Image (cartoon, rainbow, N blue to C red; front, side):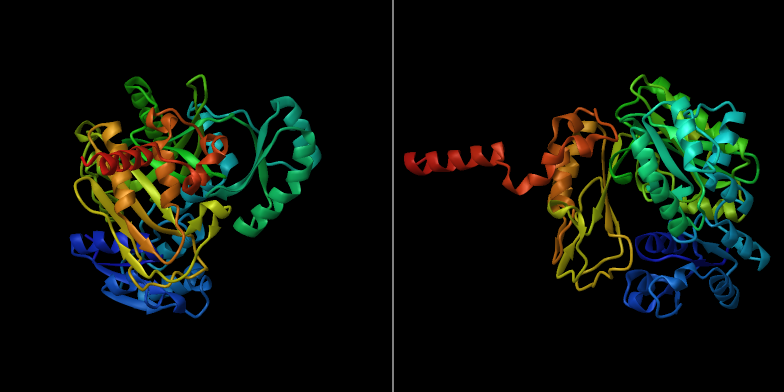
Length: 471
């Protein structure tokens, strides 16, 4: 087993990895920029080291991080998600210094990070993909290809991820207008000006499958997650398993994900993402070569500690379970509690947390790195916490979600909590019928403070009547 791990990340995911290390008897090393000096992951780790005054530069400095890991006696590096987690150069640098990178091999990261290469690998493996192109050389090539594929199309950065570098084009004018924008976004965000095109699946359901693969030829899936509730390609609420799949679909997509992982000789934890169209056809979208933000709900329904399995796999151990050992129980929902103001265009709401307390009770988990008195720095992602709820039925899981969201106390800033309560109350969501267009189709959800509550109105009426009748 590994002895000491440097966590090349910050915030919530760093705290999550530190907890896994503590339970496994592994020492943890945290890193922090000057603005993160009082962050929770710094307090929780066995050791912590400042990586500079710049908020971002230190977290992205590959060779400085590798040098620090070696100098502090670490034998492995966990990249978490974001930052350098899907950077093949970082994985190679770790290997060159004799450090274990807790993730897949660098060549696999590079291959699956290139969307056109990933598409070709899936096509060769017999996995369905949406009609699309190789990398485009010019806007003229794009226009010609779009005519063959048929509008609407999705213009995508080849090295994209996290919802960035993606534009929908409904006609030639849209394509001409967005081509240079996507090129610019791709260059700034990913350092590459390469883009490709796919047929747009209109309002699909976004279904992803968690896979685990060790170095002994064992590959399994941990069932699927439904990530259809998203805004501008950014996930807001995730569900496991999907309430929109039947058992035959569930087994089919799980098998596809395992086939995809085996096709590229994948090891460690990964996620294979699919789109499900209105005719119930699955299409491969991409593979994320890291732990996902939403891994928590898979852990909740299966009882498998995914971060612990990542560490075991990296240490060369076989998977702790076989496919036939994996069972699931009930449903789980994760809410990304973001420091944003839904009523003001989801603008960031960074600042001082004057008071915070987490909800509790059966079937409630909170992963976070905030605390009362914490000042949220404006340099990073707006996600403050992940609230996870679970129950044996879909209906009970929704009820528990409502209760836990109301119980969460987070004061001093605006958050997405009231917005999520509106989503949970919506009849389409409660019925388990939604797709990636749900948020755009229901702009009225942001007017939560102005909407009359039938249950509140009934309570008021009852109170007034009781007062007048003496009951």
